[in-house]
Structure formats: structure tokens, C-alpha cells
Image (cartoon, rainbow, N blue to C red; front, side, top):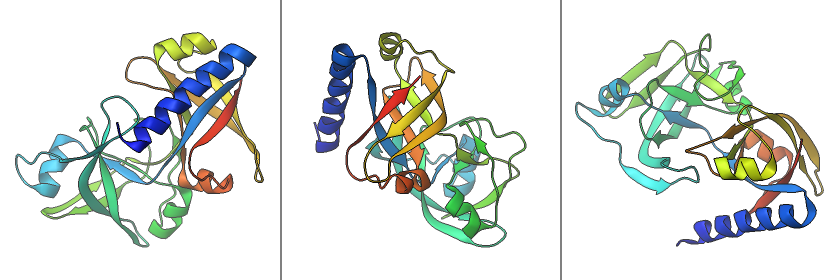
Length: 212
């Protein structure tokens, strides 16, 4: 087990132990950098017919992984180079960026949950074998809390619940409107973007308290 996996296992055990002892819910937090999800058709347009995305490292959520592949995201004003592709493939291509990234691209995407891309702006993706222009699919990901079914049951939370998250420390904040994503394919972790991570001066392993 690598160092990150060990730290994560410790965080999960600590969270459940604290809840059993105090009734307070503390969850590990991860900063989600800009990234891209691709559909099969766009994988082939960008990398070639029959191309298969190559595994780089596992992510915290079951079955999710970072790929070796990186693309350039192009907007009306500028571009972002070396944006990581995440796997596995999706039904529709989606680009998740921070608001700071949107200023560089000249795109103003809405804050949305992953997969909710109707009416969002598009962009152009440039790969080693060609480019793809998507008419929609660029979003700023809404902050959310992943929980397995067992973890959600332990904490008395349900898929779709809205909670608040409190970060202590020198730049203490409370994040509102945090969406719970619970069920199969999820494991305990809060996902915030890089702008939000910078707002709380996040470094290393961080825990935040869930306020129902």
C-alpha cells in the first residue's frame, strides 16, 4: 500500500472513530485540479482509432483513475496545456475547471454537479492525433461529499442531501451547499476545486467537519 493509500485509510478510520466517540462528523478533503472526462468517440478523434486510455494512478473513488494522457483546452481567450484525462470513459465528454481557469480561457461555465452539462459552454480539445470541439460540457464542479452506503447510514445522511462544511485554522471558513453523493461507487471524501483549496490554505492531509 502506497503512502497516500495509508494516509487515506488512517483518515477514514479516524473519521469513524471520532463520530462514534463525539457524534461529530469529520471527513477527509481532496483538492480536485482541472481535468477532462472523454467519451469513446472523442478518445479516437484525439488519439487515434482503437486507442485505449493508459492508467497512470488510481483515484480515491472506486474504479476511477488518472490517465497518462493530457490535452490542451482551448477557449476564446486562451488555452490550458497538459490537462489530465481521467478514466474510465464517460458517455459524454466533460471538462471540469476552476473559476480562475475560466478567466484564462475566456469561458464562464456555471457551477454544476458532474454530468449536468445541458446549456453549459463548450471548448476545443487538442490531442496528439487531432482536435475535438464540444458544444457543451465545460463546468465548475459543485463541491460535494462522497460517501459509501455504509458511511452514509452511519452518519445519517442520504444521497442528494445538502450539508455545510467547516474548515478550522488560520483561514477558517464554512462552505455552504455541499451535495452528498452516496451509494455504490463512492467512498468518504470531500471534493473541492483548487480555488476553494487555496481559500482555506489547504496543505497535506486535511479534515473538515460536516454540519447538517
